[in-house]
Length: 315
Image 1: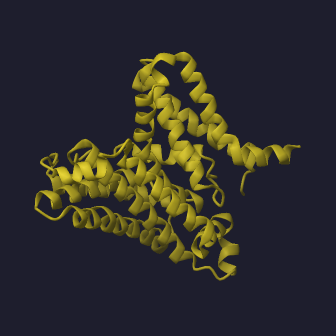
Image 2: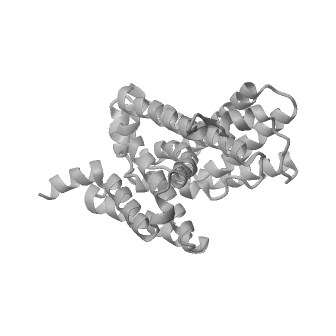
Image 3: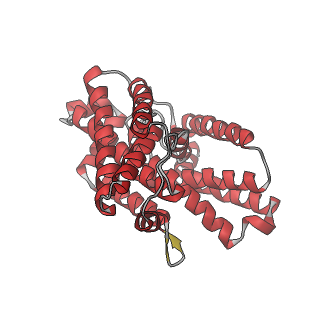
């Protein structure tokens, strides 16, 4: 009976929590919460958390973590904005400033993890500060304004009734779902997270896959940085602050095991939506942002506790 319940919880637990939260907030504020405009806003606000959380998912999947994603968002957003203001075409600026720079920063994280043999927590805690410092140096601690309309509307605008950031998040989630479920690399990453020593004996290149995982995280953070910059209409030196918490929370709340080897991109999407729904509902109920931080921390603790209870602790 316990095993059967564990399987059901693993498949539908996060979705059930999301539905329950929606119903509770809908009952508490039926006049505002269930409006089309509000629900659209919830999904829009959750899109960036989905993007950055999807990258964080891979680092947690190998029993690691990436604390630098918020700083990567700021640095990639700032470089993209600088390129745009300098007259670089929008597509090229996004490819260089967002994706290429994000991949490079992720590679640096992965390379340092592999070469120093230190836990990713230590490495990314250091690069969090380094990347943020580089952002402040490049920007002289000043925002960059005057971004072209083609960029803001092309990245943060709407296609019919669907916000473009939502489309980006959905496409990215589908691509990464394919990577995890249908590719050899995805299976190897799960194996690495499940048991690193066993993966090594199976012939998996441990170091290469660790670097790839952090590159994926860096690229996702870079894309999130571009989207955030477009939504704000400017590149802020302190942009992305605290997003590492949202990224980790989205993955953990979505059922990704903090001990590695278990989780789905679908769960990250659910986790990000839970965060978005809660933040939106608390705002509607006029609950202070200070209490929202308490709720977020409690959710992380509760999610990890449920993982240990129903998923089993990995020694």
